Length: 459
Ligand code: NAP
Image (cartoon, rainbow, N blue to C red; front, side, top):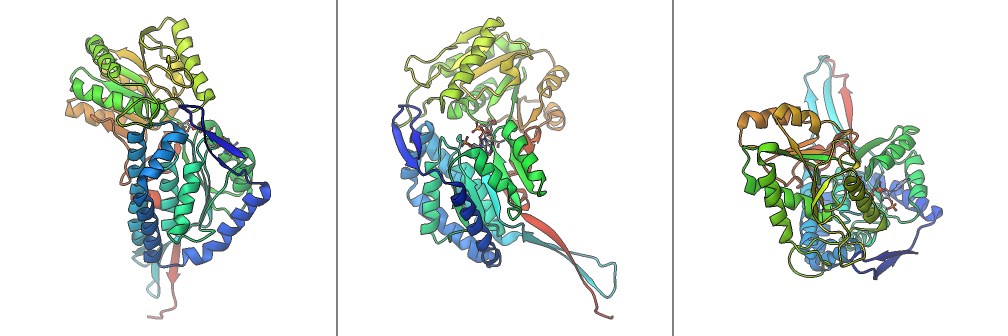
């Protein structure tokens, strides 16, 4: 039995059964058996079922928000925001299901027509992390089911309850057995079953780069298509010509979301040296006004880290920074509330090769670096194996254009701290992975192109 604890209180939130190897294989069998019927349904029929699922979950939004808050630790207002974000994917792909267009190509043979069709790739599987237990599921499932794929999904062991609740509502909405299956249990073993089964034609994975590489290697044997949404090391650059109020607002919102446990969280904050002191003071002032607390209350609060390993990592990174001579301007230690709470921390005076700069922090830590000019900061921002997102604040149009071209990231966000929504292509480059989720690009990941030559017309 998998016992799920509230990271804010240590209390048990619920339990799910650990599936045996046999049960996981049976779920894969059901997904494979369901594929022919599901993929040959009319797009409108799939769309209608996704829409029913969307409406059923939306009607119980508060129950989902509370569960999310209790199993993940994020506050209620964030949980509600995640549910709106996640429902947006079901709604978006319920519509996109009807728009998987092919092509006709001017023929090279006067007796033939040349068509290009797009077909569902097959039964697929997904493995998701704990930081967005709702949205990660709906983003993958909504897209796959819309395209005509069936999906087996393995949620993170820290947060499986939301996934099983979503499954329950999918069934109530009429999404049949096999079309969506959720499994829980030993991650390595489930990963081996899903990647090792040649009938599963694609794996969509969101999580750490290390596990992503392992799964990619496992998928090589059956040449499975993959979408990999992996780790990040986002630069957040503030130029002296930026609107500083907006930059602070964007930074604090992006950094403290989910207590910093977000792949697109600003990891290295580069501030132009002429405004460094002013900017740091503004950040400290903004952060000082935010409470740290368990999330089952109104208003935004910084919650706990999700588990002991996450907490220990933040402690290790900050202690290493201190030992290397960083100046801690705020926080820098576990919070007095105890447990998995860590103080929102602001520090500066770090080298670019410190672990805080090279590793994903995944905690409420603002690591601030100064820079002199544009050329220098672009080079430093790109000095990472990751390439998920890069943020910059500047009022200069020419510079915005240069940044958009030169920053090595799948997503470049200028003068905003807000990235995701259903209508945009979310994803990274370099070791942050490949493939996109969201927008019309997202559904391309679940279809395969078929060229059809219809000859024999004897014109
Ligand atoms: P993780 O350890 O890689 O876990 C992610 C998922 O993989 C979990 O379901 C986990 O299962 C499973 N898993 C672990 N080992 C496995 C194995 N050997 N075979 C198959 N599955 C395995 O990552 P995490 O710590 O949960 O999540 C944080 C990471 O996700 C960060 O690096 C973050 O940047 C990344 N992330 C990326 C994005 C993006 O879109 N690029 C979004 C969010 C998070 P268990 O939970 O059961 O161990």
